[in-house]
Length: 464
Image 1 (tube, rainbow, N blue to C red):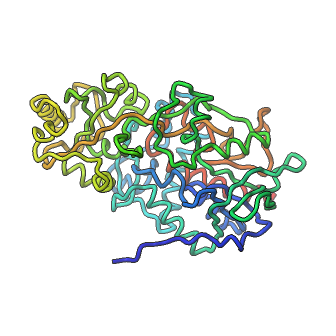
Image 2: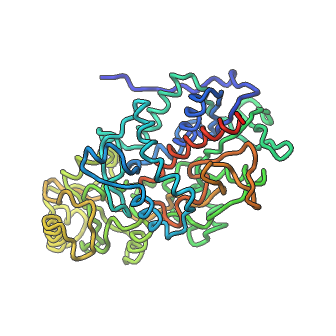
Image 3: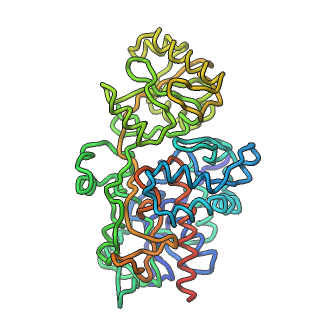
């Protein structure tokens, strides 16, 4: 068996007082930005405040959206940038920044190619809510995309000897003559350490784990559980605004509909489970929504149920298509039944009702016609291969669509629309791309598309 890869962060004693580029945050965006900048000949450093690398990217499970890829064509899916744009624009309530969205959708296939060039191959397809085509790319092992991507990127980072430090917190962006010239940090040994840099990329993620900040913009969401890792506290937003950056869409906070919350920690149950064929039922054993509608609409439907929670129902065939279920089961989140009636008994549901629901759904799959809720995706397989499974879910805070105002070049903008020289931002810390609802599979795509863009634009900025 192959030895498990273990990345060793750079020893703190090697932290220098100057780099071409400081990348703050070690999730997908930060690692891609650092790699792209390094490959263009720059000397970047990645600073991570947490002891663990990867940020929220580690928790992504479904895949990476892209249109017009060879992978799609190999799977007989004919897609276009325009359709990808239209689905995302509609899914975001038409509040998406058109310039950013245009860049995002038209560079997604190139991002898939860039990953493949680095041995990170996403050659399997699934679908997520709000998409009309199969464009959610993932590895053929069907491993959860986030951990896979972080591990593979860290292999590249290690091979290229790009320095990556953990437990280093950036406390301030240093600004001289209206230009970002470096950062002030604190680490395990000292506070107020100065690091000079010609440019800084903020890749610090969102603020889904910061109840105070959520309360400031969305009082109605205070008290909701979150799927975010503890470091997702909006530090980059604070750093940027202190340096003069503008914010956008801060009240647009996404609640994910399918989160298991019966344990001490909230576990997101990825959209791929529904994308591969699972259905949602209420405590009464009946379907109540098109499971692959937008996250916003599915969340609203669950919240209208008396229990404000529901159950994902699926079978062995669907389970075989979503490797993350093995993890969910391992930690005790999955209920089992040899038959649908057995499963209903385990869930304290009426067996006849749940059996009737599943039978009706299987007929809809056979005829490719869901007359009850109009679902037209994620219908490649029915729910007939026992044993059968269920996961109890309810909505939880998942993603913050708002953040630092940037343009499609990832340049950070001030209130007057001018750029803040030397400062770039990408990923969840930046707002505007997703409108009022992020489509599943678009966040990982955003990390690669705009992570690359940040690395490229820093190079152009320094060259000029």
